[in-house]
Image (cartoon, rainbow, N blue to C red; front, side, top):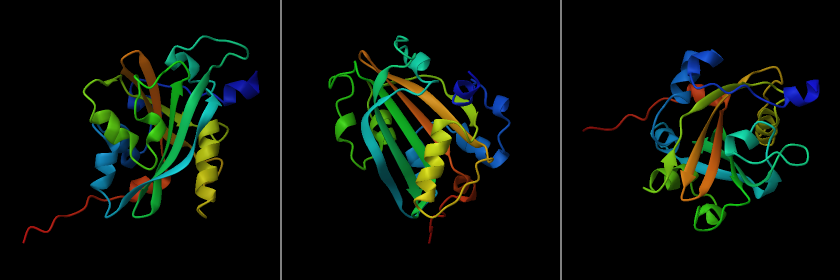
Length: 200
C-alpha cells in the first residue's frame, strides 16, 4: 500500500497548494500555449520525442480520464512523452495520454504528430475544450519524476532524487474523446529569459 501511494501525486486546483518557487510558479500558471511562451524565451525551440506507444495509465491518471477501474485499477491508453528544448536545453518533460477508446475522429493528428508540438495543435483547434489546470509536486518515486530524470540523464544532466519536480496537468476534450497532458517543469526552465526584439 505504501509503495502504491508513493507512485501517486496530490493534484490541486490552486498553485499556492504546491508552494512552488516564484520562478516556477509563473510558468505553472501561465495561460495559453506553453509552446508559444517557450518560443518567446528561446532562439530555437524543438520537440524531442522520447516515446509514443500503447501503455497503462499511471495510478493517478485513470480517475482524471474517467476510465473504469479494471484489473489492478488502471486502464489502457496511448502514451506520448517528449522533451521540450529551448536552445537545445531540455526545460519541460511532457506526458500525454489518450484512452484506447478514442478514435481518429476524436484526435485526428495525435498518431502522426512526430516532432510537431501537441500544444500548437490543441490551441489551434476550435473544437478542443480545455479544462482547468491542476498542480502537483512530484516526489522522486513518482513515475513521471523518474522518467524525467532518466530523460535528463540521457542528456548528461543529473537531477537528484530528492529534488521535488513541479508539474501541472490539464484535461482536453474533443468530440467524444479526452486527452490528458501533464507538463513537468525541469529546473532549467527557471533560467529562461524572454527574447529581446531589435527595434532599430
